[in-house]
Length: 384
Image 1 (spheres, rainbow, N blue to C red):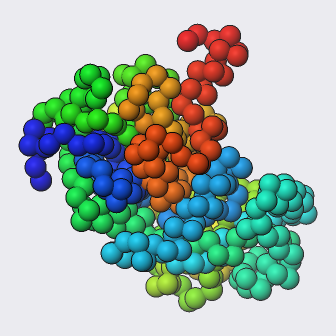
Image 2: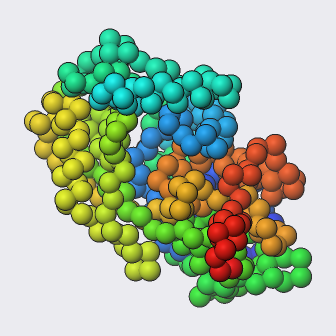
């Protein structure tokens, strides 16, 4: 692995080697840009290597839906786009309603989404739910589904983007952190412990560590570290073909082709980005396991063989920052995906490469602007 001092000045320096950084590197290199990716640890070390791998349009914040829909189109073609295995499989994503009130809310969401022209979410009654999930608990009354969503192997998918980007000429520098960003004429200088990299444009994709970099550039991005928790069980007889969530409580649940069950969701451990580590909270793991057993009684027979957590960046409104700097030419951001960014990776990479290479994109990024927090504080009379 060569160091920064040996690098030529790329057109684009990407800080952060997660799926968004690797996908952006691939699409930018495909456009003919020279690209370097700088990663303080190793590619896919954090959020992009430890998440549940859900490839999900279901339940997205409405602002994210167009990007998510575009990303799903790319996921469906990913076998022809990349040269390495990503583990992507099409599978229904289903959010289970455990009572009539939850089902009514799911119905309202599906109607609201359809009013915006999107029909990928379909409401399931009790019988339709059981047809898709024969092992679901008796008390479940229905659900909401995206029947051609799916899942993938996060580390494989991120690495596949990295390898294809490298084949197109992108350079990856691992175990080197960006320490200081400074403007240099019309370009940018990034100082590291191993030297200085000069680049025409910068894309910050550094997850929970992006806020400190944005602050150097005078932009307020209150991203905080969170630590999603995951469980994997010993193999069970086949009983589930879908990726399952719950309408009223945190859950991400799927049975892998080898029979193991991967369980996660919204319960979290302790994230410590400053020390580059996270900690499992077993009380939260217990609640996750109890939810899984409640929705799938067969899980009472399961044995947990491994659990883990990792660090992800989360924004106060739980949607990411995607787009150009509001203060500087040549600076761009894509971070703070708030524990649901994996599926968005391909489309975000495509969008950012288009924006960076051409100066424009047809994707509406208004809701993801970095200055939305600054504007909110101004409206509330807070400090700048």
